[in-house]
Length: 79
Image (spheres, rainbow, N blue to C red):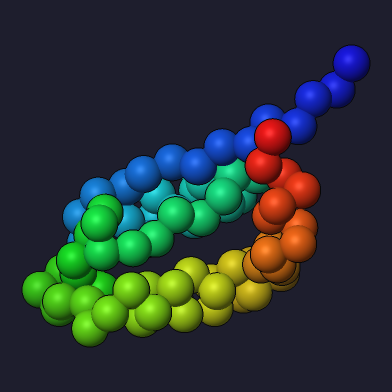
């Protein structure tokens, strides 16, 4: 029987955060972003807000040809 595997990963720090997030997305996982994991937008540049990183993640997901889960879809995935 096939099962849905719902996962996220964490990549901490300016150098690892975006590559780790992208690899997780490409493997079918969920993007996780926020200042609790990383305070840098890029090496040496502090984030202005969580929204700045969320906007970046959404842009990358769309550039990969994927869609961002809506609240309704996300609630159905949570088991």
